[in-house]
Length: 271
Image 1 (cartoon, rainbow, N blue to C red):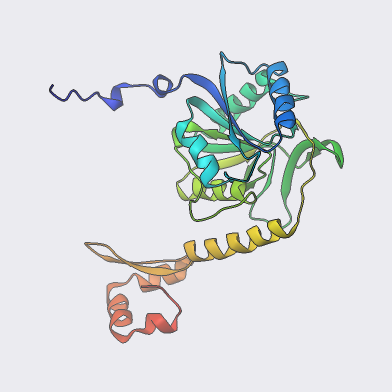
Image 2: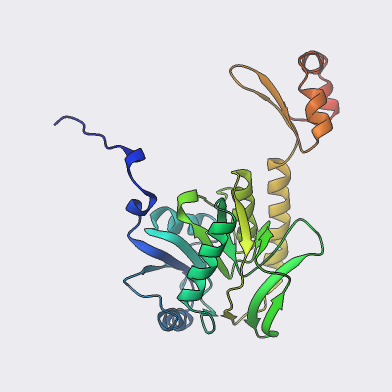
């Protein structure tokens, strides 16, 4: 039988999605998850507009926030993917409100990739939150919507067409919200905290697992963001976060000197 390729360019984005939303959850408590689903249904999410899936961690933590949720991202059939904690309840805002927030961000910034209800930016003191939890009732912190470089994991909404994924060289249940935002930014997208009010039955738990994940995350991204020399098939490049060093070390003569004299090793750079 002859091969019959189809034209991808002739298809609209909507042609690739069976649902408006794909809602996925890491589950280690069946009762908690059942209550989440009930709240989703009351908020207007149902089998007509959404698909629901879970990763089973009831007997053991077989699936984590990185490789585990990547499985969910890869099989999602929704235009938007919602990753939500099992102890979240959609008690306040409904599906109509979420649609409004998505439409508003789409008009404001078509290059958006991830939305959340809490997060922060590069400023060490600036964060944005819209939530109710055991410690805070009806909390709204900062002017929303707000562009963010990190989002909290309790509620993440990802635009499927961006084809984002979590880092496969990280693991655990913390900082994957930060990771997906950094992956989005690397690819030219943006992330936002939106005014979508829900109830989360946890205020966070900074135990030893949290601090270990933080250490691993810093180590991982220190390597990913480190300055380096690259050799392509056609040229040599120097990449760093410094405009001055990029200008200096990408000059042909200086690159040649650095390569021949091995000075790059003294500078702590990777060739």
